[in-house]
Image (cartoon, rainbow, N blue to C red; front, top):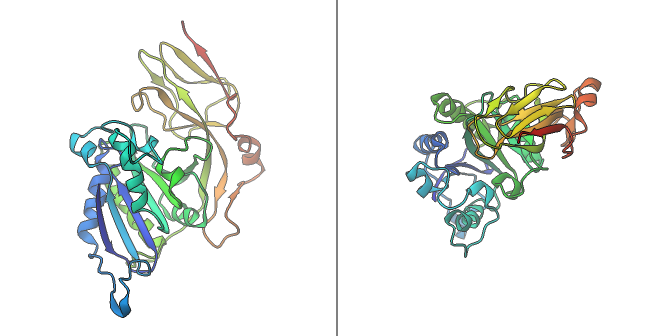
Length: 312
């Protein structure tokens, strides 16, 4: 793990993490670019204090260096499924997880960079909706954010306070690098760490993740893209083992991909409303209107939206 501290324009302590998965080079390139552009961090030491706790700070992290070097997702275990981890583990990533968590302890906001094989658009992910998370999400240049609180509990954003993950684009693409770089600069602005221009906030559509869609074997086919409404009775995805037919209205795919994962086609979700910018009411999800309520408020982890037909 490589940790690079840089100067902040404000008092907040914020962090950007790339290279959680070693085969996602966009995050690595973005972190290195920011490290080159931002001024080195020089903590104040006047008055008998080193200033680490009071000074603003931008911490840039390249998380899984062996996997980055090998250009593979992980070496022993998926780091983003390994938290909180175990310092005594023989698995490299499981032992790395608590070390990474320690580097992020006490930070006011954290942004974790990812890419995927699913189609655009880019989107954000949160597990715990704090005021800092709301500020991050509504300040990023994304239209959708996934509420993953009902899914895994072993990811960075589910274990490190005030963390947002962002899928910046298609894995291996230059577009993902450029979009992710601009998203990071937006993140730094909204937390006062970058003062080149005023931050911009906007309402963000919230999609509640409800369940993973299993993949069996053979040739996979996915028929709907991320956040595209799947008509009632339509087949979302299929292979030689499964036919995933959606039998309830209001279901949308998340991380929909034929080749992105070995065991799942992606996830199902429902639109639950919008997240409003800071200063516009309390920290919660607001239904956009009564029509969105009728199609979206029932996604609390129920697993009966999909009737998957197993082909023998």
